[in-house]
Image 1 (spheres, one colour):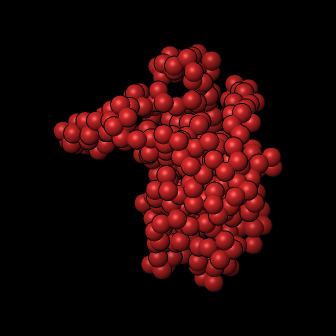
Image 2 (cartoon, one colour):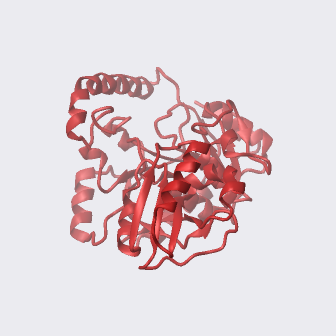
Image 3 (spheres, helix red, strand yellow):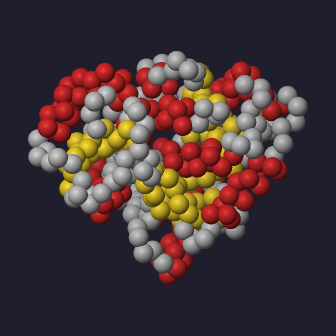
Length: 360
């Protein structure tokens, strides 16, 4: 979505878009090589930067598949302090693997959580180190075309469809709109309340999916908050005053939720994937202290929670709660989406050890 001041960057966006188009053309013409694996690989991605809901979608798939298959996730590990390939273990921290992989690791103990910048190298390493793996979910990898996933799912936000967007930095697109044609499934996320069949049809017509593509719609569902350290649950109420602490790309849906569910809220907003410091901790405590209410809490997101856990000694006695988020499929199409995913996994069977070797 272009904001007025971002028009100033339009010339840079033209150059950026041309570079992206040339790169995609080279991959399409097989000048730059893509490789696939004889192994079930699902890619979650988007065409734009920002919060379209990739992390909750990875979690949705992990939750759907983990009881039937040995699932692994592979992420770049954005803003981690390490480099190269790694697999999370009981001693791993968010600084070592990144906040989103750490979130996966904590929520799904039976899922292998791996990080690696070069996915073409990381996938064989992952399968070598965890040979019982039956399925890999690539987090935020759609634009990284060196690996060609068997099932590509892209997300686009209802308020900012990629069809209405433009290249960075004037807009939010990091890939061409035409790249959506490589996806198998398009999910319109964070739909506003009251979206009906008429708008659904109009959006599908605007997206103009190819014959092989399916379009789904989801809304954000917030779960019951739980204490960051004790994990005790908490009931949100209409008389509650809240300090929202978040470092995510798009807090607007959460703000909308708080507008409806609590008496009032104040927000301390930090950059996406922000690494919290002692100064930030002091700021949070000071701001919380200014809220003149006997019924108040600090609320944060799951992504931020893994970066705040290091302050356990300082925050243990504070009412700091984490609010979980999930995708909920609209128009009664949850089963159709899940059938498409599980059908793909069941269809792609690893052939002995051949899955370790990429296929051009």
